[in-house]
Length: 313
Image 1 (cartoon, helix red, strand yellow):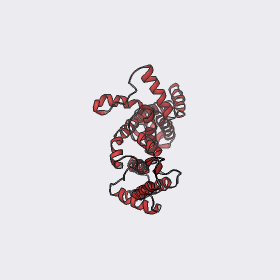
Image 2 (image 1 turned 90 degrees about the vertical axis):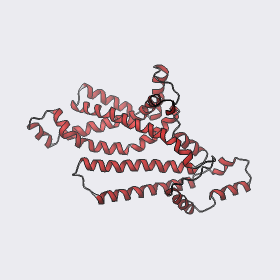
Image 3 (image 1 turned 30 degrees about the vertical axis):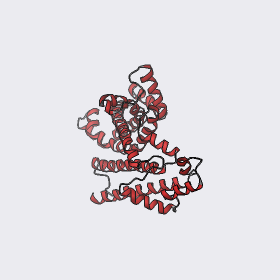
Image 4 (image 1 turned 180 degrees about the horizontal axis):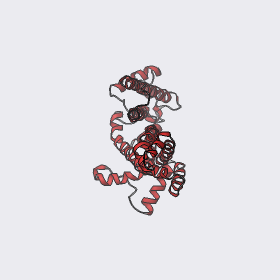
């Protein structure tokens, strides 16, 4: 087990290194120069040359990447081109809102998908199962931002359950969480539908195995077999899917932030891309990649613990 963990950690670090290199290379070759966005169109050639020398933009790409990587590993995310502050100072206040939104969305996915998946699998082909199937098909086809607009119109403008204006946690934790629940729901619903579909199929697949027929022969009811034998095995692909969905949840959170006006990483990322503020964009990309890879690593450990039969490699 120890060797498997070390191997996975090495893979994690290698993945992050590759992501950082690709992100740095991509922002180095795409059209557009940050000097125009920062200094304006009226900048002189001398001002442009001085800015490029100050920021190291006149150096080869590989040299800039190695310098950036060494600083990043030391906790220095660089200096924003556009704003007179470090990347850490610019990004840190925004991380909390995005993580809160993603965490609430993840909890909602579990609260919605697990009961619905279990209920649908109990009586396949029944009324509840057909209704859940229709709802999941509809929900999966709706993009996050469209879902967000629809939820805002319904709950904010029609039902008036909340005001469509961001409430910071300083104004009260409960009002803040109450507001964040609605953008989180917009992120969670499409992934909940996919999780319901996967869990239902996984449970029905396990119910057809020989060990379930043995459990029935020992007097276990369908519900008892589900709880004692099926659910643990059926959850393994669901855990894997949820871990892989972390990236989509984070990306969906960034998109939905624009709809609901949440001051998270989404606003900073979009404005930094428009301003060619590449140090900020690179830091956000690597941080998101670290979150995704880290969650996949934890999920790998979790489903190995759930099923010891999985080969420890």
